[in-house]
Amino acid sequence: MKILIIYPYCLEGRLHEEDISVMPIGAYYVGALLRENGHDAELLNFYNFNNAHEKIRAALEEKQPDVIGFSILHANRWGGIEIARIAREVNPGVKIVFGGIGATFLWKHLLTHFKVIDFIVLGEGEHTFLRLIESLRKQDHDVIGDIRGIAFRKGAEIVRTESPEPVKNLDDLPVPANHFTYQHVSLTRGCPGNCTFCGSPRFW
Image 1 (cartoon, rainbow, N blue to C red):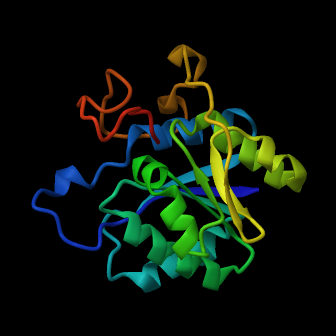
Image 2 (image 1 turned 90 degrees about the vertical axis):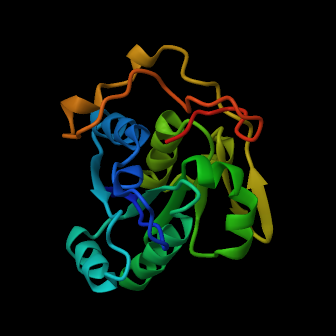
């Protein structure tokens, strides 16, 4: 299977480009774990692709992904929805997965109002997304409901599975730099803040 992980653009401009131009480090961890397990995973940073729908369409036609995972904050969720709709026009059978802090907190809203989204990965996404990809590859749809940390539609019902165990030893995860080139350094995991809104700051 061909898997793309896309960091979408914000619909509105931002004061400082550096605030939105860097793909979250968690997306690299997700991609690295997929590659370590033999999957064809590629990351695309579309932070500056707003109003560039033809470029997006051309990239998706070239890559021909089977699954697209979107790294969703809050400001870029509409960009993710726009790109997902273009992807579904290019390939009606492509599976669309949203993950990240924005998707984690808006999972029910997103699945209720945007039928283009097939799955939401909640919280830390490395192992959850890998298990989902392996189930889709095997077309083993019966076990998808047993994967912890996802939300999806089951008929007319929106289902959320049990929360996954957090990654306790980060050294068990592959080093993203062994698979990808990026220009930022992370010395810790999660949000540096301690606000009551977030609660569990572990996202991709």
